[in-house]
Length: 324
Image (cartoon, rainbow, N blue to C red; front, side):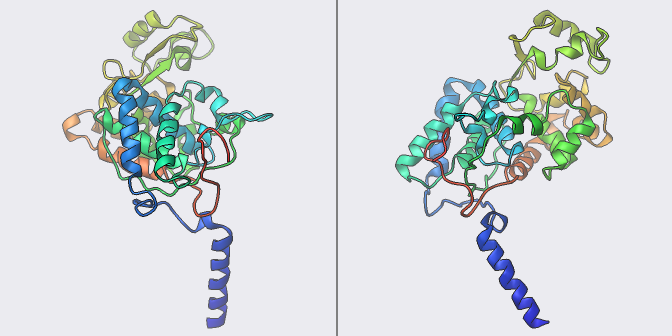
């Protein structure tokens, strides 16, 4: 029996050597010896851009979210298309992403400081955290050590990203398949407290909810009236605030909007269709009793560990938009 256990241990160790990503994880302070100034450099770079354009915070956060939901947090959303291959960046849900210049600038600075050490996927995770903090949101310790993926396929983004049209069952399945639970779902949805959206992401709720020219009964009718003034039927260019009056500040107002049936997307309204998520929404309405900031940091850390490449898997890109 002892011999069998010893042989099993050796086999496991060999497997770990061959499949490094399965045996190592990300950790806080990963670069403390190889690139000790990594967090300061990324934060300084992010602050430089956010100070001039605060609205970049939302797309940077969304970029990290979209990266992790497709092939894991491997920086694949940053890659440009190559000949014969359309990348994730080209998928319709990602075409409105902005802030790639922030990641590129941070990468350039880090390549001067410690060349070939820090991955683009780690830079994105840090920039998303810093962007949220810089607009008065929470902060959290970001585990690092991700490596960059070499694969980025448009169809993967279309297949795996949650959509603003999803009902609760679909959302729960999508999040659950990645190891995120119902609480993570309602907490991460709170990221909609910042940012803008195109009218086409929710216009069916205003004009043709069931295909009969009707409005969504789950949305406040007065709110629908105000949205119709901004968004005409068939409008594909106009953008509106996801959290009116507070879209530049990371706060709990999103949950107040959802509780009043004024969540912009069908996926926002879906949070009121489940007892657990509805209870969370209502518990966050009073900002003085809110746990949202702490919860958001915890869920972001959890999300940031989805499908990471570590050890010798993947690569450390020299330029975030291109494979080595």
